[in-house]
Image (cartoon, rainbow, N blue to C red; front, side, top):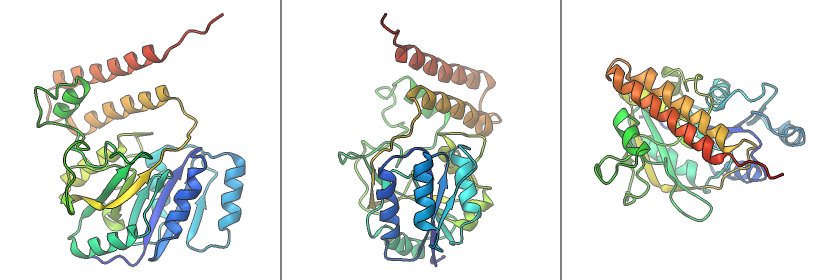
Length: 289
């Protein structure tokens, strides 16, 4: 049982847009000790300059910049390596914390046995539960059912639980979202952090898988409600879909090669790339002359 002395909040920002300031203000408004580490993965020069100027005299706010867009997982690890807190909160830069978020996390950490990880309820700007904040571990089975929309044949096997009844209290959960992950610093580094081979997407599912394999327990706390507004990152949806495909393939190769028949994995990887190809075709719109 470990009671946090200070939590280091790590935000990785890439062209996040105006919501970044809301997210920062909400972190700094917490009523307990907090360190904020802003990892600038490539914001506009004027935003970068403003962040540096604003926090140059703030000992518990650090702006890390100059490394370019190195990917989400690698940037999270970069921030974690300089963190002074005994707990880490990985928080998306377009997510706004409620005022009592860290207070509740501190109370929860006091009750839990390490190693543990805690996720929160994520709502979009319209108040709807977002996919990913409570979900199953990603396996070849859950991937096939999700990819081919076979839920009516396997109603009890779902990847995302956002349509299930909301738990009333802190509840063990197979996996949570990288948009909000609270974890003791020592446990994060015992896992060697995020796998930097993932550039964008799936690195959180991989961390949850490895955390489970190492004997850790993951929880979902419905009392912590975070507004995940969505930023304005200047990347195309097709780029995101490609990174998802690359991430899914890496995830299955890393974690299931020894336990899954080679033919099944091959079919799964073909399905992943076929899905990306379909997305690419449907996103193409010929220009009018």
